Image (cartoon, rainbow, N blue to C red; front, side):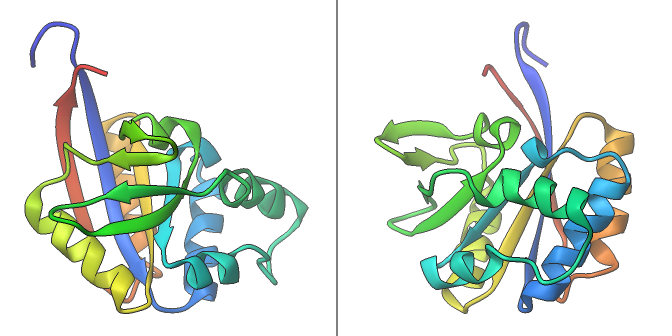
Length: 161
């Protein structure tokens, strides 16, 4: 790894039902993940549908609100695709600002970029989880797999940021 670089680990999973995403987020919070580690992607109507989880205790609602209450931003993916996102600070730091509330995911492998855009266009919500260690990434991946209806995608990379 280059000097000054930071190792980053992400897992992405699409959900076609908000309830499944909320349950996955609840499992993540119960197992020590922080709201700042999550990022949600979707169309504006899908993101709006996620704003009020009908389940979970007050701790879950507060933690999820920390993510969903973030200002909406857009991320430009491979080609001209842009999708809406709401990110906790740690997750948002992975994206390069290219305009006001517009970001680029220059670290995202092309196949993940295409898959993310395709899932969002088809109406799914995508949850991205950033992890602090390989062990935390493995735990997060196992927790996500309990709830997802799509293939889990993971990515590990180094970034100077």
